[in-house]
Every structure is written in C-alpha cells, then in structure tokens.
Length: 201
Image (tube, rainbow, N blue to C red):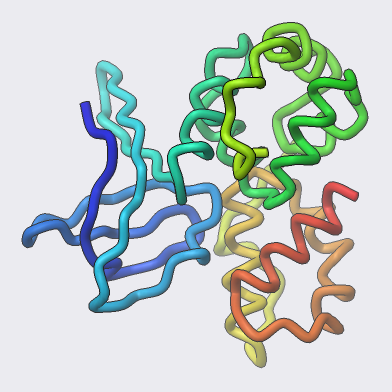
C-alpha cells in the first residue's frame, strides 16, 4: 500500500523510529533506527506494510534496494520480518549476498533466529534470485531493560538495547560489551555497527 514516507523523525528508539508526516506520527520498525536522527529536516523512509488479524505494522528501509532485499528474505520459509530486520541490521549487505551465492551457511547462522536449516533454506530460495538487486543492497532474548548498565555512555547503552531488540542473545552481547567499551565510537550508530561486526565476524 505504501512505497515510502517522507517526513521528519521525531523520536528514535532501539527498534523503531517515529516519522511525522503532515501531523501524523507513524511508528516504523527499522533494522537500525540509529541511522536516523531526530531533526526538523525531512527524510524519506521506504516502507513495507504487514497486515495481520491483530495488527498493521510498518517496516522501514534506508533505500529501495534494502526494501527489495527485505522482501526477498521474508519470502523464505522460516524467515519473518523480525529475523529479516536482524539480518539487514548488519551493514555488510554485499557480504550477505556473497554468502547466499556461495552457500556460506556459517555466515548466515550468525544472525539471531537463523539456524542451519533456515540458512540452507535461504540459500536454496535466494541463490539464483539476487541478480536484480541494486549494488547498494549488495535461545533467551534480552530486552532493553536488561541491557548491562553503562550510565557513563548513553550511546553505547542505546546500541546494546538495539542489539537486544534485533534478537541477539544476552550472553552474546555481554561477551562483546568489553570490546565496545574500548571502542572509540562517537554515535549510537557507530557502536551498533561495531557491535554487529563483532557478533557476525
């Protein structure tokens, strides 16, 4: 129904942003909300609307290519929107495409919610269906409330909350937290990108 929304970002949370379009605030779930910043300058977010018996949910993407990759992922048996967002949160989309084309199941199973069977299904379903994508596309979960306490670094705390919202296990995130504390990031997006790199390397 919707191709994209153009408006101003009024709020950024670990798993979604709020986009004000003509006085209406749209809650948009995104793979990495911290790519966006609260600002009076308008921005464009490509969206996909999922409709069920109980909810209507908007998923947002930084560009059309990312949206197309999301649509391909959710068409794989065993991959829902949340798992697709967790996969897309890793900025190395080119590495993802290479992993699918080369049957690198080990790379794919590093994402939350993706076991060997689902990784194999991703390869089976998508291995020969990626050529039309634009080059730019190229256990117990924890919630933000259980993020390790890092009162001295709100950007790191927000990034850890975002990793939890994406579905990464608390034990895995705690394991990389000391490395992130030493990381010289300036923004939440910096910490989140580094955390995703550490979790999927």
